[in-house]
Image (cartoon, rainbow over all chains, first blue to last red; front, side, top):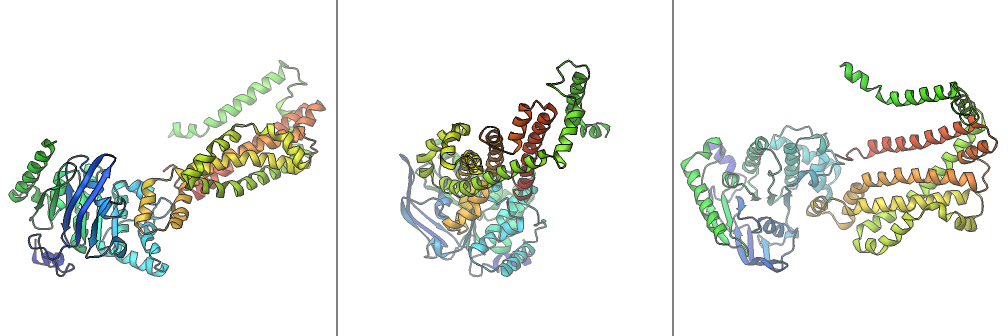
Length: 275
Length: 253
């Protein structure tokens, strides 16, 4: 990482620590979270602190409740018990963005990409002229080259998911949730999208929670990997990833990175075998 | 390239084949000419009838009745379908009734509507509207109910209220299915109108035209009226497909 890039990474977050080690007060605090589906306790008195301005990957065995966790944090599923606070505030008091796995069904096909991105502002009753200006500013800021006059169905899968991500970012969220955002894309597009997400994260410094089913992706993108056990889910490990950003293909073969990934895999396999 | 050019002509082959067989049959008098007139006589009757003849007047009458009944049906069925579709409980409790009357041949309702509305236009239009309402209602409700769950959730996480979700998402989500309903509805309305024009004290309309020509044994005129009715049905369907392509551009994508 060049000094300029480091400055870029740290500057927007302000008080946040450059890497995960000494996080300041947590952004999200989760206390005694419990959730049952029928007779299965997916979460039972689950506690977690999410550090500010970091990208957290959630990884764990199938059916351990990775998506359930972020869906509860983002208010898509209501927990049976427990408390989730963002700087001491409830979800309805903060701005957040959510990116679905299924971009095809999450975008509105009757709106052009531009209006899809601006839609959350309409919900916030922002006047049309300002909606337009803010959307244009975001697109310019992210430097993403897309023809936003197109309808979603005229775009490739990756482009559609980029539109979804921009739609989540338009409200200038305090926290961004992504539920397996790239798993419906082909490998080439997935690699490209990882770079895009990394770039967006470095630009904005928004606290980000990413659910992934690909360990390499989880480690590659994260400041910390949240490894969950089988249900009822516990924190099996909350592994910091110290590799400098921007990470590249070279990072994948970096000894530190390989060691971190191996450690995560070991924890994962231990949790899988425990069943 | 050559194959592509030829492909554009494929639909013409069926038409040309039919005309050829028909001409041959008429020319050789394989069928009694009284029952099957030649294509020339038929198209002459069609041309004359549509250009200042009574057939043109009958055509307009049938278009008016079909359009009126479909419009009434749409105005009633679309809002009702949205209400029905947005509440699973309401839908489940009315599903049987709707399905039952949807399955009842609308022609079986003629006597009832005759008692209610007399022998005028109201009866024809209301029976056709009755048939079309149930078809449109069913499709609209189905379209609303099958709105993509992810899309509804997406609107919800972006802070859309229930009413917003209804207007911004469910309504638009149901449009492709609504058009299926409208297309089927207008086809059914046309069938009912033509039948009604034949049998319930009608003085005009394509159904009347076909029936009268048959009574007078004026076969070219009868075939001409049948063709006019066919063209009307085909044209209405095409019209709705064009409207759908224009306004529901995302349909099937």
